[in-house]
Length: 249
Ligand code: BTN
Image (cartoon, rainbow, N blue to C red):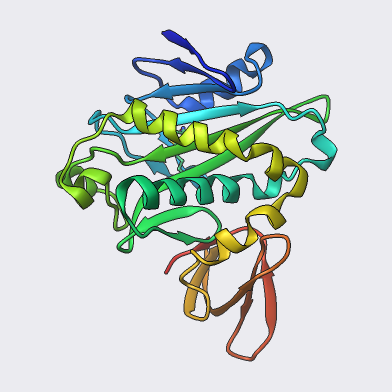
């Protein structure tokens, strides 16, 4: 385990861990705010709805950021993954010349393939949130052979650009960008990222499939509201707000 001291955050690098989110949740009480658990070798990574998150030890990013907001009552927890998705999109655009899009609420796609997923979990103590674990997986150097085994179309930076990258260098860029504007997000919430988020939601206006509680239903995606929720219409023109669930296509 190596500790690197940086100004706004510190990274704990682990050679191998079951799941960085699990490790962060198990140790959250003694880990400081803005501690990042990072590995390139995650043996039992979890995605949303307890899906498996694939790792092939090819120098990808598996990280969990611990956050302990001071003013938890006013903290925009519901939009935290959306904030991180915007930060990552901007990085992929600026540093790698890619055109990422966001699939509500926080999957990052490039050329229709998933390159990154985000999983936020809170840790409760005495009915209060003691801390938040914000996990992110980014396929950096994953090869086509592994990508083809993932149960949905998936891509990596290597597959998209033909180049290999140092995962830790990309992680540092991501965290620097995250903390650069984090204060603004903390105080303004979704309002702060609304325009940047919506312009990358390329599914708006299209027919989408939503999976919720094991059922799949077809809707037209209408808009993202002021709180970051997805508004949809069904075939009878009834409007709904989607709070949880997955956009499948
Ligand atoms: C999803 O798209 O379903 C979310 C995927 C989140 C994966 C990351 S990898 C690092 C962290 N540790 C985990 O076990 N999961 C998250």
